[in-house]
Image 1 (cartoon, rainbow, N blue to C red):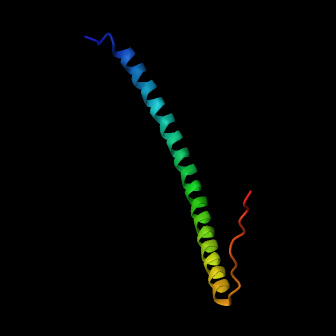
Image 2 (image 1 turned 135 degrees about the horizontal axis):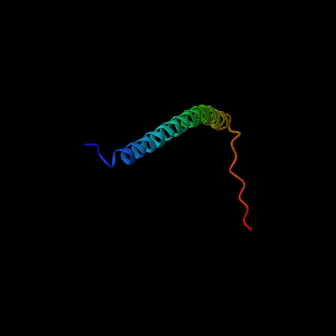
Image 3 (image 1 turned 90 degrees about the vertical axis):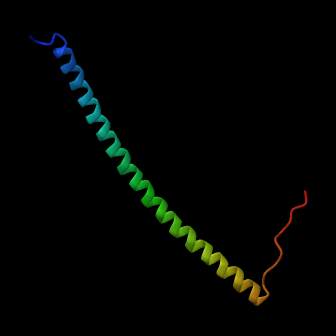
Length: 76
């Protein structure tokens, strides 16, 4: 005796498999983009660290040379 719902179940399963396949492709693309963003953020982090070190060096030089002045205050 054949299952009367077998065709419907088979069609539903095919749609589920197709949907999961599309989802898998989408997630793979999101992962690629996320890796790219991470790489760019890492580069930005390196530049930020370089700038912080440069600022610390400038501050040290200005303090040691006596050339550091108080920041300008605008009293409007």
